[in-house]
Length: 215
Ligand code: SAH
Image 1 (cartoon, rainbow, N blue to C red):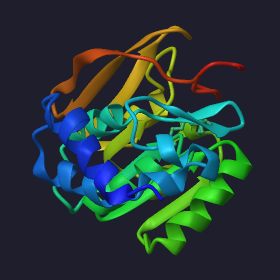
Image 2 (cartoon, rainbow, N blue to C red):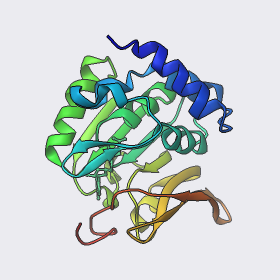
Image 3 (cartoon, rainbow, N blue to C red):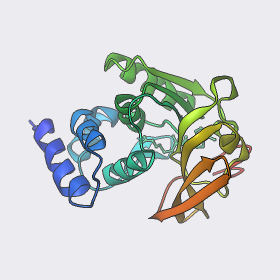
Image 4 (tube, rainbow, N blue to C red):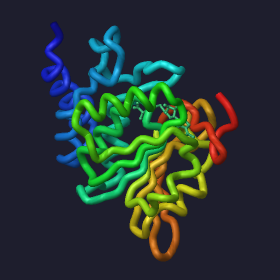
């Protein structure tokens, strides 16, 4: 039997804290959420390893450090309305649900969305709503959002997402070509958009109206 809580503590020490993640709320959330439940049983022994893992439909659950880095960049304090594009396994969704008031998550692949919805409900995350849709269009009915996280690589920043950000809001998104991207944080201010490059990364493609055309 694998001691999952122990594996999780070790992951947080060796991959998250040691690489410079400082937000204590992010660290606590990563210690709490049972990541192994978000992958299939045959892969559970690798759930706390330092890499992404397949979740079916040619998609992946992001590397733990990348989840921590993106979440920290959103600067969540607990009262935010958060939009997530690319819900996938629902693991990142659970982390966001721990750290904010409400999470609206969009996933384009039905089977993934249905599985994530069921698991998040079983785990008691009642502040999450998952929609099966093209997330590059955002979720206008629920806008504006204090934070928006895109967990798939985009060719450009989708305009609708910027439109749906509140003043002071943060959008975190990987932008680049299909092989490599840079993680950007875009802050919406009264004076305009402020863009910061947080470093290199590699994600599966964001597919949709304001993303890539196909896989
Ligand atoms: N955060 C997820 C990452 C999944 S990979 C996790 O850790 O499990 C990226 C996900 O983005 C895939 O599930 C893919 O289907 C989804 N995706 C790609 N383009 C999308 C779009 N336009 N709208 C919604 N989801 C999209």
